[in-house]
Length: 298
Figure (spheres, rainbow, N blue to C red):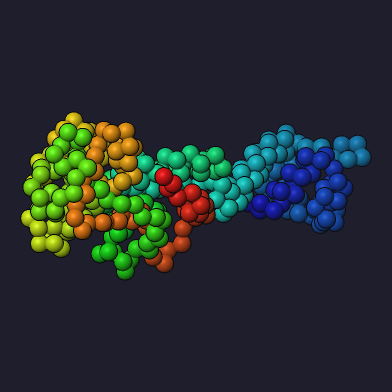
């Protein structure tokens, strides 16, 4: 079906005049009349009929006009959607985040982002470091917000550092090492409450022990979430090695205490990870730009 001819017919039906349609479309009346006759022949239907000095729609013309109105309304919706998708005011962002940014950073970022981009759909998966990167590499997500640096994926993943926080050893206030300075081997004799395998802080702790030829700690309790691990330490069991973002308020309130391990001053990198040489949607770029302008502030 000739959609150009359908559009001409729809303008005629909307204005009730070939003359008016000619003026609006900047097409001569004879050219419009010729195309409408050709369109009627294509459909094997009479759409227009004489009415006094003008024209009127036949019954078939009335129905075709209603259908054309729906069609061109959808066309406008498609054009509007395409424009909004291009400028990032519409779309979908698939995001994987490790537990630290998912619980302590992303809620604030998303709240601010949605104030400006209400129509953008956000799909967020909270997982450990290893799985977040695998989801990114498998094209299951567009962006991964990561705590720590995925050195093994440097060739395939683009890493943009947002900021660094400290990694702290923490214990309950009644622990004998609370607010004390101890050696790394002494600290490693304590039972640890940690996240599951695949957690970046857990891997950093084990790597630390290898670097300093210290025995690895006994991980007596293992949880799949940060909150559970911290709560166990607050309750008085063992120690934890964790981002300062997670426990800073607990330490300030006196619910946890730091342990200062001699010679150990480790930083934790919070980064945006994307696939190298692969363009992001406008909505995803808008989200990343908003994060750049609003990183974590203590």
